[in-house]
Structures are given as C-alpha cells and as structure tokens.
Length: 333
Image 1 (cartoon, one colour):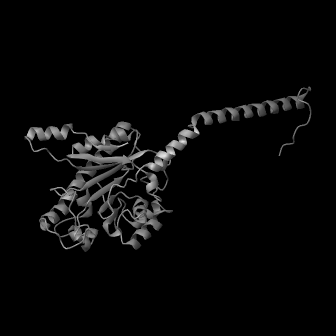
Image 2 (cartoon, rainbow, N blue to C red):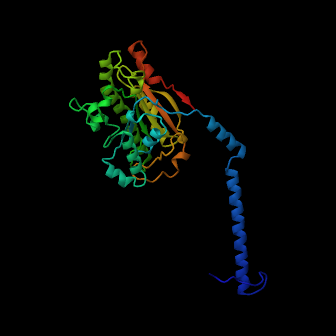
Image 3 (cartoon, rainbow, N blue to C red):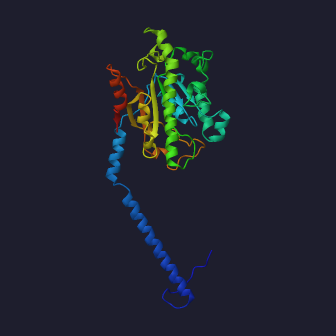
C-alpha cells in the first residue's frame, strides 16, 4: 500500500504538487459521483408512477392461452422449464401435455443446459409428461415419423388415441444462428414462423380429422376431464396455434400476422406475456444456457393465439378478399 502523503497543499515542492493532484482527483471523483446520481435519479420514474404501474400489474387478469383440461404440444422447449412451470402451477394436466425438443437426446441437453435441464427433465418424467426429441417445428409430421404404420397414438401413447390435440405452442422461436445481416436474419425467421404455422395445420388435420370423423358427433364415453370435447376444433381438425414473441425489432419485422394470413389463420386473441405467471421458467439462448443480453423477464413480449380463418359464405372472390384484408384480433394491450 502506498504511504499517505503528509503536508500542506499550498506549500512548494514535489510533495505539495502530489498533494494538490490527489486533492483535485478526489474532487473530480466526488463531482462525477454526484452527476451519476443525478442522471440515475432523472432516469427513474417518480415513485407515484411506479406505484401506479405496480397496482395496474396486480389488477391484470391472469392470461393463460390454454385451458387446464385441453391438450397441448410444446415445440422447442429448451431446458423444459416452461413445461415444468405450467405443470407446477396446475395450468394443465400432465397427461395432456407433450413437450418436445429440437435436440437429439437428453445427453445433448445436459451438455447444453448443465444447471437446469436435469431437474426439469426428471420432474416431467415423474409427472408422466410425454417427452419427444429431434422434433422440428417446421416439419412436425416428418420429424415425428408419423405414418399409417406408425400412428399418433403409437408415438405418444394409447391414451391419446381418443384425444383431440387442442393446442400447439412455440415460445420465442429462434433459428439459433448468429446472423449479423439484419435482412437475412428477418427472412430466416419468417421462414421459421411460416413453417411452424403450415406444419401445425398439417399435424392438426392428420391426427384430429380422423378422430372427429370417427366420433360423428357422438361421445366416446369419456368425461371432459379426458378431453373428448371437440369444441374449438375446426372441420379440418385445426385447433389453436400459439406463438410467443418479444416486442420491438427485429421481431416486429417478422410480420407474424401477415405470415398467419398466408396460412389462412387469424389472431383470435393476444395478450402481454405475463412472466410472473410462469415461475421457474427461464428463457434460454437456443445454443446455450446463457440468458439473453437483457433478462427475459425485463423484456416486453406477447402471446398470440391463431385460429383457422372461417371464410364467409359468399362468392369465391369475396372469400379470398376476406382472407387478404382481415387483420382483426382481440388484442388486449
């Protein structure tokens, strides 16, 4: 440690010069701290506004995009913390949930998410949640290896033979590529979202339509707890396609409503993503356990619920205009 200099600041000599320099440095640091404190104070909203914001947040109704007795297929689950959270909060029955990962195996996910995956995975297994790997959200039928010889119930279990698939959900889709070219980045993610919409429709039609035809309006002898109600399932077998995205750029430029229209879908409802409703859910990077630059829970995001666009019973040209021009949704902002 350097020895503290003693003497008078206004005296002559080298020692005095050093004392004056130290004194000036102390004054400069003191002034800098004062300026930083003032900037911080100005940047923070008044206490009354903060209190009002917290009160409004507390008054917001809880928004969960699916019902407890409905079925749900989760795409691109990362470390499976979202799946774990919705089971713990009793938002859905474990037997009605299928969680999928784009990664090939639990081993791969243990390497990618060493601090979080294992606990979440064991919890879901113990709860009886079906977990599938190597599932591409843009090629669901192909990656699930569905065929006449390998039907849906053989892949996910016999209990699903008489269950409709009500919801498919993809939280914060991302290609995992670090593309610096903004235009190319936007185009790649538009292809990802478009592929998700199209693939979800194909899967719904394949597994729900035969079930709907087989029931012919009659019940199968199961209670609604077993999810035998076909309400909300279109004649083509489509259920709800759910998508969560962050607000702002580059996400706004993805134009997800336009991509939905091209798939004959429309926004049935959207709402702010309420992070506090999903305790334990950690939004992770696609390729590692690291969080994003800004913590996800501090970022604004929305949940969109898309449904099949019901064409008006008019002329063909009129029906096409309805698809092209409609952009209505019950957007709770």
